[in-house]
Length: 96
Image 1 (spheres, rainbow, N blue to C red):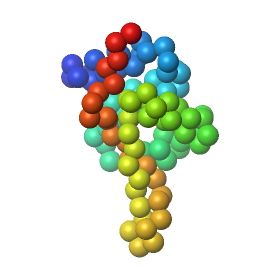
Image 2 (cartoon, rainbow, N blue to C red; image 1 turned 120 degrees about the vertical axis):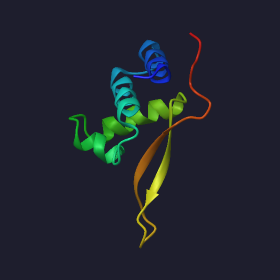
Image 3 (tube, one colour; image 1 turned 30 degrees about the vertical axis):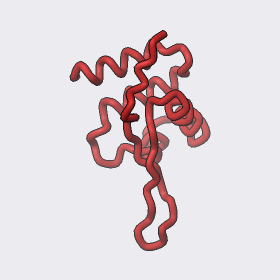
């Protein structure tokens, strides 16, 4: 694990504003972000929390500046079909 990943993970783990569910999703993102297919559908399909709980946890991460999402559109219809996660450019390394 690189120092950057360790630093981001440590900050998230110690951030008391985040639920443990959100911390787990963030940890999975940091460890799997380079793998194709790591998106909201993957998290829902590989966990037991369900769509609503997963959406709420991702919302926490977005609200607090840990992640941003970019919509993925179906090429033929233009319909939004999923979200791709990205780290925020200005890291959420919040002092607390």
